[in-house]
Length: 434
Image 1: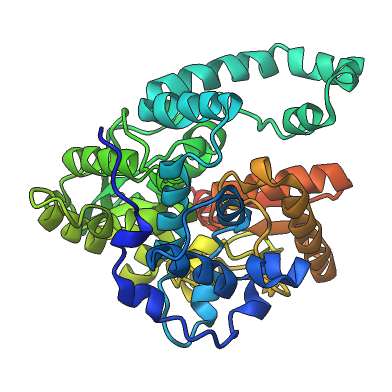
Image 2: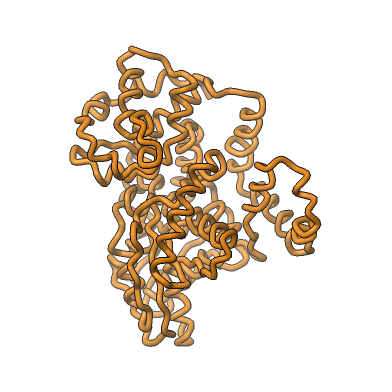
């Protein structure tokens, strides 16, 4: 795989020029809100990108660190009156940072090679690692180590990372979901189900719930037991060439012409999955399929709202608030559809969350590489949740779910974090008809 020329210098320059420097994005940017520094704003970052595109400066370590300080939450895109495609600029800027190796170090290089170039390139490796993590948790070793206090002997950052270790599901998606699931009633649609990476290990029950809900709503669901990463992790972290490889693999496995829709239930994945045509714009062989792929990929809430949700007949009384995952509301402009799903559940009272579209600090792996800012955002989110008085928070992204679970546990809050589709599936099961 040959290294490409400068990503920013190859950009469609009109994308950079769209920024009018009006500043309407500033109040929506979590990092600018926290620091009030221009360089920590979308406008400031675009100015840096433009300087590189113009050849006035080269990528430096300071530039790269600024690009990785950005959450990539895309709230600026919702606020922007000029329609600046910050998502494309952001990914190209990180790709430029990686191309120039200004952040290179032996430790960083090893971590990136292990995760991005090895672990997530074959999900059998990820599942193998997940199985061992599950064994470590199930036999009580994790609990024993935590109670022993031995972790206090390690650096503080390692202690923090260990405390964030997610509980691994007893069964992964391929053991919960058949490769082909028939529609519960008359078959109206044929859809593919993407089971994801972290979603598969940590929230495979959400994947099962999603397939059950799809079947209940007239869909035949195809869920191959072996799938590939969608490439969002790679694209968001400057590895565009690897993201292209994974995009081609997914198109080959799920030919878009074979399905009415390709379903994802993870907001971060969905935002990336809908832009394969941009990723493969210079690939004449795959571009036509990529364009059809982009049209067929649907977030689960989006799809249910489009075909009409079969409302459950009864459900228990419950109060729920809804946190909007950034890549669902800002990246995919999906805000009303999850509420439509929740409001279809009888007995469910939806309590609106103040600042529901403000980032929780998860942002892919942001909470791992920028823990201080991530924790500030998490604390802010939990404080807003407290004002609602509810004990159930619904959100449509595994990263957000895990961030809120860890935050609630750390603060001693009695919160249930659930995917909206899980709440719908539970209502269906209460009828005994799933």
